Image 1: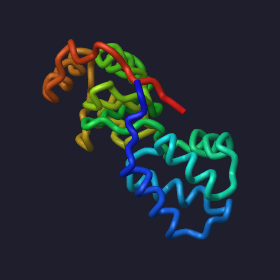
Image 2 (image 1 turned 30 degrees about the vertical axis):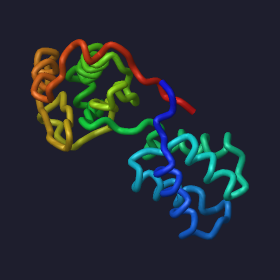
Image 3 (image 1 turned 90 degrees about the vertical axis):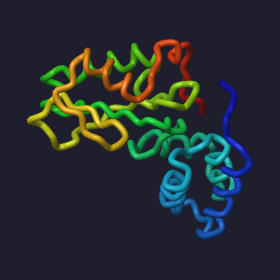
Image 4 (image 1 turned 90 degrees about the horizontal axis):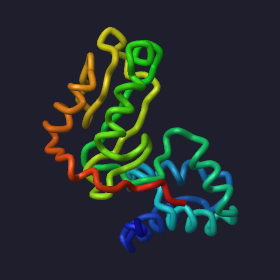
Length: 171
């Protein structure tokens, strides 16, 4: 899929850079602010940050992929987070993640081509008695089964033909 970044995002990154001292030690705070503003780190935005701080692109990418807080894909309108903490793992969390991946035709960390759905795994949401747990648009869904995955997606307006393609992480 071609880059969906636009001039507006680069303008926002430029404004963020103007609020900081352009020293390599400010890389993480700048990336955090870009993430907060845009909800992800656009590829061209990371390049601009690297050039502005005198840091090679590969080093900016290394930092962005090392820390779990950073997203490299824009989030979907509907954000699905599957818990894979110990209790959820033991109660079938990976099966639930696999069901979402198959239905949406994306892997965890990806967004559907229409940007309707993004799927990610999280370490723990603190609802162990409800395992396995999925958080959909900040609403906790407990005791999720493969059948409930279909119901959750149907409730969000998902149609099977929406899953025709997928967006890979691009960097």
